[in-house]
Length: 283
Length: 156
Image 1 (cartoon, rainbow over the protein chains, first blue to last red):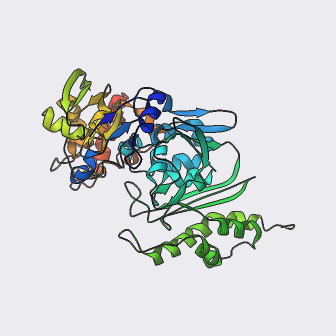
Image 2: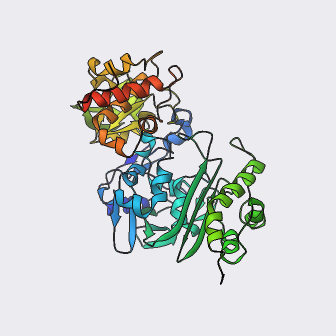
Image 3: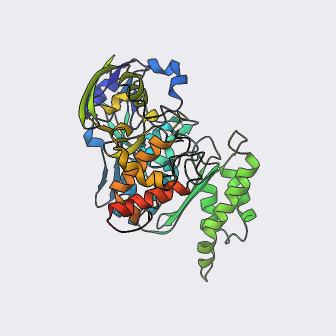
């Protein structure tokens, strides 16, 4: 196992580009996903890694007129303690505070959560509900990909082997509704059986479901149902749209039946007040 | 092997380590600091909590190479008298979780402004204890914070 610890982004991208196809370097930000039960995962101990921790340019939370930008090393804790983030994007801190506990929040990163690609991720759904954009860089080029177009399948994404996620950008806009719900066996230190992030802004509804598909999943049919349909009167009113968007399964954490019932209920709970308010004349 | 230099409990430390080692392994087996315990090995129980650059971290989930150039503080750096509020409130029993509990507790005690936005219970949620039922731990931390702030409270 070789460990590369570049202090400059150019050097990091050079390292990433220098690998043969099919044998990429593994970029490591906080390491909290990588090291779970590490002593038992001997076959992975040979893998060469690119440790990002010396890349100070990738640290922290940055604000511009149009964006909140989370550097690739921005941790959950960095966002929890950023008062402005708490005011403008409250779902970020709400989700971050439900990731493990301080010991994970201090090390785990938003970019790592995105790249790790777990369908049960806590950070990804709130980023997606805020229309976040992933900034990818390789030696050859820099490009941006909307987070809702980032995943191509279970733990698969459009990120190429030589690319690093260098930042995540969230457009600054005001939201008239924002909700995040994580359903787990306990309030801390849990992985979601079901999760949901919902926002509504001038850009429309965003509904993002967790642990009910191979990836964290944006739900366009549900969004359209909320946009143009009659206000839902019960969780069952949302079933048809949900069925089009998600495909829950039985696994060691929960069952397909539980997941679809609970998802419909938390979704109904998240949208019903607002949907009823909007049932005013003219809509 | 990987050359690793960092600050450990206020003193410089430098050694060669297995590049695949966790910070927990380096502390316990290379440096002989066995106060930091391994519990679950998956970042759930918090028994291996240390401070990394002033924040609690699970040493079982920190690659050793990420300690390079950083400030690491372990239970060995804690003066015994600092445990008094926890002992007084019945916050310890079998002791397996205690080193991690103490490291998180002292972080709260040294950063009492955290309690403007968080409860002790939320901040301690990453330290699992199978003996005490938690109330003694929470009371001990609250008493230590009160003591630190110079207000009477908790311990009588």
